[in-house]
Image 1 (cartoon, rainbow, N blue to C red):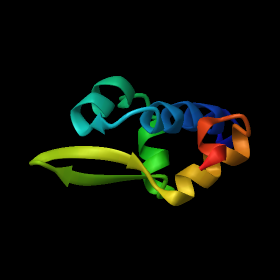
Image 2 (cartoon, rainbow, N blue to C red):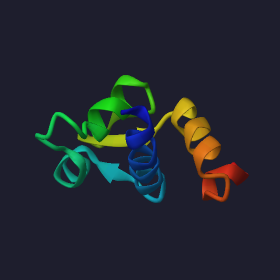
Image 3 (cartoon, rainbow, N blue to C red):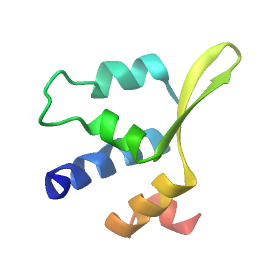
Image 4 (cartoon, rainbow, N blue to C red):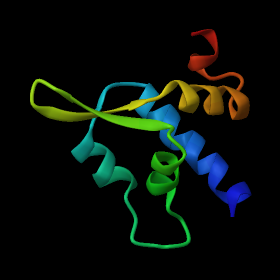
Length: 82
């Protein structure tokens, strides 16, 4: 299943890294009830994303380990220059 999830996790991380995302926005776009494709849950469990509170709103950001994962699988990503 990891081979199936890695590209989807890259998509999630790239989407989050492209701009600040609220927790609600991320959940609306990426949460799934399908136990075979737990993209958000897997990225969270691997420590690739973090939830912080900014001005009273929960915000999701890519962690340094998430950035490293994204660079590994998406070498042309905008994160590779960071």
